Amino acid sequence: MENKPNSIKQIKYSTLDFEPRHQFDAISQAVAPICDLKKPHSVDNGFRVKYSAFDLCGIDIIDWESDASSSERSSDLARKSDLDNWAIWFVRSGCFYNEYNDRSVKAKTGELMLVSYAQPWKSRWEGQSYVSVGLDRDKFSWMAPSLDEANRSVLNGSLTGLLRTFISTLVDEAHKI
Image (cartoon, rainbow, N blue to C red):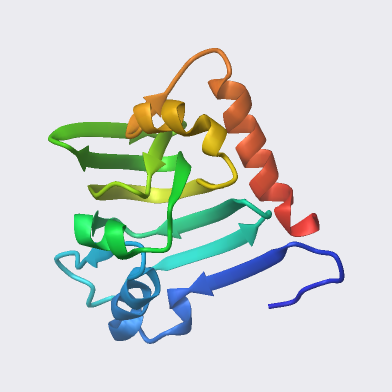
């Protein structure tokens, strides 16, 4: 990782750095503090994942690409975890299926979904890429009631297109900040 003076912190990760037979286990261990990644039917030819993460002092951005997968964040893991954020998941390509409190939500290419990491979930990912914009709960506590109420919803409205463009531009330009 190269850090220029006064630049933001960036972390890059790829399972392509591992032999195909070890790729799924490597990413499973990397995301274990957040969720339990479920093994797809076959990972014999590897499990391709790569991401870049940026820390903007209270806003975390993760640009994620991967093969199809499923994950679960149990109540126990949510309770024990240090991660207490909300996130806006921007689906760049593919679909997210998310189950929460007997509710099922689907976010398709181009859609934004609001997610609370303080709550458990089950999700299935079919596709190629998404961006997660994490908002630290402590730094955005003034928005807590509104964000908690909107948990697991697909965002829509007049500003959604602007937010989508902003997130895309921020991800594309983050390495220059």
